[in-house]
Amino acid sequence: MLLRGVVSTMNVVSNFDEFFDATVSGQPQVVKRDGDIIIVTSLNQMRELLTAYPLNYEYEVDEDGRFAGSICKIELIVADGATVEELRLNLANQLIEYANDYMSDFSRYFNAPNTRPHFPYALRVLLEDDIEAVASALRSVAEDSGETESGGNSSLGCVVDYVEKNKARHFGKVVKDNNAILKAQKDKN
Image (tube, rainbow, N blue to C red):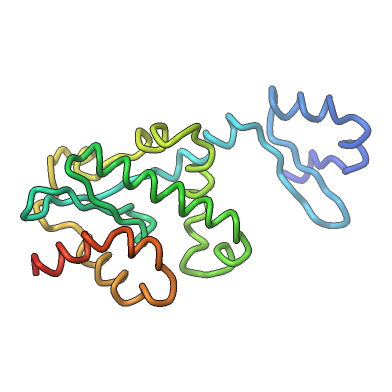
């Protein structure tokens, strides 16, 4: 159905201003060249499309009073902070770094079955203006459920186990930055 309005690359090139205006003020455009098809959307349309991929996080309060958390759909993003707000900023920073890494080595991340599902989240993060915008887009599962903290029943323990098992093959920087979380989890157990 979408292919009914396919535009050829020749039409795009010869009428670029009209094509651009139709995309920005109208609807997404479908362009075909030599059997390959792309869909072009405006920034606002893309942001709206990506709202289906919420940036949720879980956290718990460690015995020392620090907040340790992880991104729900990107299990390798973990951070901690003295307050929930500091945790959110640290998670946002980790998300931005990961999203930049994802796009810098897109073929590797997109073609790996364990990181392919992260693509819309990485794109959503990179469409934000700055770290504060990313942090404000983060939603705590506890906030959504009305809880104030997860009381140690979150999946963070699973995340820590996953990171421990896989840190040698991938996470170098993330694990190094988050050794405090790993140590706190081991001490807690």
